[in-house]
Image 1 (spheres, rainbow, N blue to C red):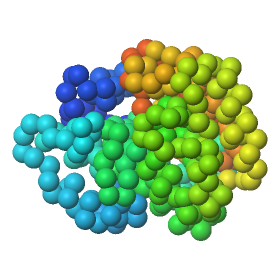
Image 2: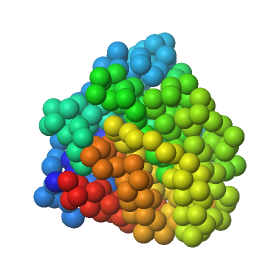
Image 3: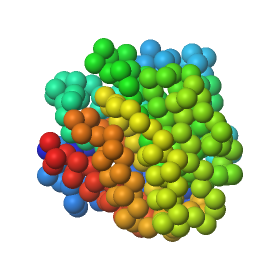
Amino acid sequence: MKINFIMDDEYLNHDTGKSHPENIERYLIVKSLIEEKYSQHNFIKPREVSLKELYSIHQTEYVDNVINSIPDKDFFYYDPDTIGSSTSLKSYLLAAGGSILAFEEIIRMNYLKKNSSFFCAHRPPGHHAEASKAMGFGVFNNVAVSAAKAIKNPNINNILIVDFDVHHGNGTQHSFENNPNIVYASSHQFPFYPGSGDIAERGCGNIYNCPLEAGVNSKEFRYLFEKHIISRINQDFDLIYFSAGFDAHYKDPLASINLIDEDFYWVTDIVLNKFGGQTPVISVLEGGYDKEGLKNGLDEHLKALYEYNKNE
């Protein structure tokens, strides 16, 4: 079974400036890889998210303010790190809506209880976005909005979200820390931005954080990920999400974790080996700010998703 890619060149219109880490070049790198190695797979255009869908995670006033305050020209700042432009709004709406569409396609294509993979090549990323605040380059929480929609489906009882971005997904954790039907597991550099993600943060027993000290290498990462996530979660899931960030790569300029290319295959594969099997997967792009690290790490992640599909 082929990977289903959800992507759109509209993301080139979310301009943050050439010097910003989360810039247009990131989408071009991702698109180039997919066209070079995965052109025979399935491609789906994203749809825009609705206000109701955004309100499931974000506060009404915040959503309305984002939509109604886009300037007519130039850049603007939600915070010192999170930049938008006059042409960014549609990208925000497609990134969130496209993540929901992945789940809708699972239902439409009768992929429940099947090994199937969707990769959402969206920007901006979203796992830092809080209920009422843009953070960490993101405005709406793409994974959280999608998972909130999916958990309402009567065929979905339990969801697993695995976040291997080098930064803790504070927004996603806070969205679901009181929801026992959605498990959030994250490996991330700690202490580090955004300051959350301590191992003691447990939510209602559904949060599994795997803090990594600066300088952690491949061997140490694999040991800690198995110890704090793989061995501690023991239940079945109807749907798996990845918040797929590639900024834990040793070449990435925004962090200090030393993963190699193959670690992104390993982390994807070990999750799917334990929790997959007749379970659809939605992977959503988060960080990754070195050209080579992003391209190679993503390639390894996609290889693992494809191998998972082949087991159907």
